[in-house]
Amino acid sequence: MTEIIITSSSCCKENMIFKLEDRGPVSSIKMSLDCKILTMMRTSLSVELMDIKDNSLQSPYFLYCKFKNAKLLGFIWTGNNEILLISDKGVELYQVEGQRPKQRIIFSKSINIHVNWFIYSNHTKILLLSINSFGDFQPLHITPGNITKLTKLEVDLNISSNIPHQSISERNIILTPVYNILRILVLPTSHSQNEIIVFTLNKMMAFKKSHILKLTHIGKLLINIVDNLIVVHYQHTKSSSVFDIYMEAAKEDNISQYLPILDDLSIQRTVTKEGGSNYMCDLYSSICISFQPNIIIDAKLGYLWHLKLNLTAVSKIIRNKCSLIDFLLLRPKSKDATMQALQNMIVHKSSDLIEIGNVFDHLNIVYKKHLNYHIMNSTPLSNDYMIVADSLRCKVVIEQLDVYKHVFVKLVDQLENTKDPL
Image (tube, rainbow, N blue to C red):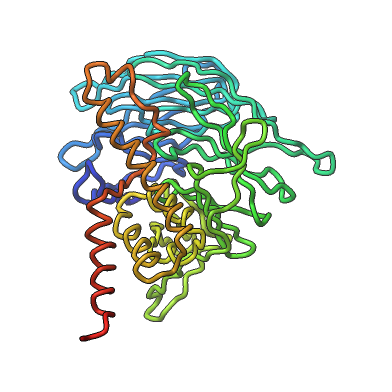
């Protein structure tokens, strides 16, 4: 018997423990979104489903590909009772009616297309299919009972004649939201390339090339998204670069070209008890893998870390004060760090009047957009005249009262304390 432990999640408040008969290796195992069906794939021919009733597994039932001679690549739960099968011959959507005396599996829709591999975004229900090894992709939008083809995406690999058999694989593609918009990050396909290409899903539901991230090192990479920042981990140099695609950048052919806003940083290493002794975990090790948005896993030791951004430390690294304020305003829960930066500039006199004036110009632009948004949003025609998302990027707005309470009052107190006594 094989024991399966399902750790707590939003739908499973407590750990669930099941025992299965050993009937061969399991290549994939997942719970349905409502945690009522355990699903696993043992072979490339079928998916095995087992209803969960009274914390025990019921008899299995099976789902097979409809496509003839298809090799099953994987499966995805797209809804509480909808499951998507992906094979090398295409995709198939089914409704599963479990938790009843006789389970029913109802076919909804299929699309016949050659598939090498796939990546799925549960956030947007977008499935990205690799349809050849040369950078051609077919995005699909999965909705209840339906599959919609989106505009095909072609990624230019910039294949070098010096590198034979160069192709694009799952390791080169990251499908993840950044600033609540789905992006495709195309990582270098060879060690000689030093840029990440970003494609953005636009309002017409098509992916368009939008940003290029200039890397400062080459070699094997790991990617995380932390507070909407694209964090690139270089395993060779054991350092990280941070990119913010909402900061200002130079453009070439209408494509924003970004250098790191933070570079040559290192993840704060964690000391963990291992066999009763201290163990210094190396998060840049070749055995570490990343999961989106902000998870790194040590595949050997089984440790998992959630990465977080230290705004206090960042405030000491970014020297350009205008860039620092722009960076902080884009981060959630950054008002305290922003006010501290303003205090350092004005009260502690770390900046001259010209730099302070430029910073307040930036603050006023954000505040004005914030006011305009609320004025227009309160009118009957607000839906027709909504300010575009780009103008409302900032997560924090600094108002006059904030500056008065946290900066000017402290400045006055400082001046009072430095006056010569009579």
